[in-house]
Amino acid sequence: MEEFPCEAYYYRIGRNVRRLRREKGMTQEGLAEAAGLSIKMIQKLEIGQKGFRMETIIKIAITLDVSLDNLTDMREADRKLTFWQEAFYAMTEDKTDDEIKYAVGIVNSVFKLHKQYLE
Image (cartoon, rainbow, N blue to C red):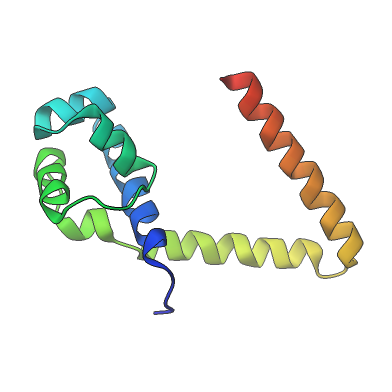
């Protein structure tokens, strides 16, 4: 497995927690209460903020009724990343650097506007 910064692990664990929580039909508040944690801790964990303790992950795994490897599993994220990387390469293989920069700028603007109007 390729190495990448610890921050990536925190982010991926957070994404897995969010996905599993939603699959169970739980809110962040519900998960926090059921696990005996603060809502702030759940929010920080789900956005991938580093610094949470193993005890926190164990409480969440028990509350969500999943094994620790379900929370820390990186394989699904790796498959998705590989898929999107390959899709990007296929779309851009015949484009110039300037065309790619232009397209990325447009996508970036769309995401910024999207976030602005959803908040």
